[in-house]
Length: 219
Ligand SMILES: [Zn+2]
Ligand SMILES: [Zn+2]
Image 1 (cartoon, rainbow, N blue to C red):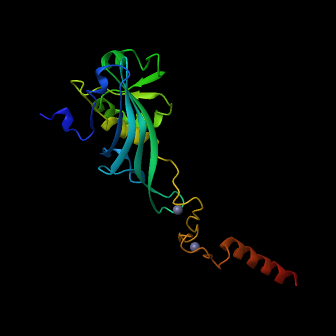
Image 2 (cartoon, protein in one colour; image 1 turned 180 degrees about the vertical axis):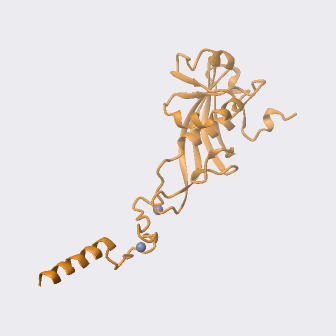
Image 3 (tube, protein in one colour; image 1 turned 90 degrees about the vertical axis):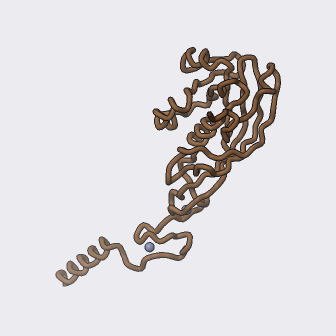
């Protein structure tokens, strides 16, 4: 049977969870989980995600705050060229010691310290309605995740997936002044800044011809 510590997303928290007020820093690189975004914009499974943060113990659980550097691949919305850039994505997650209590208290609980928490189901449950989660999830409340069974580890696979999926940029430009594609022939105007077409628009050509005909009649 797979042990919790064998997960590539497991973090040992045995020390910090012994009593409230303990803190431990996390500076590690984790592989990106599957299922973040799509072909157009997303994070490839297995790509390295540096995570920096700290795990702090409060009375009823652990709070993990930090920033992950998401290695986002995307298409430029103007020129469709590839964009590979690292996005800093801050996160706050709560791992309650008693997840079932937190989860049965309703959609949101309040620990009296850090404000509202949104309750997360386990990964298997979440996969079912993942699409609605990703797009409906716009508030800034922190997310709640269960401890790994036994309590000596937390597993941040779901946290990584949720944070990066929700943090994916909507409009990506390869550079702020990307010139995009020529609307007539599709040429990349960044590669060819002087690109233009000599041919006048067909409609104007037709008008010019009409004008010419009218003028001939008049004469
Ligand atoms: Zn571009
Ligand atoms: Zn053109």
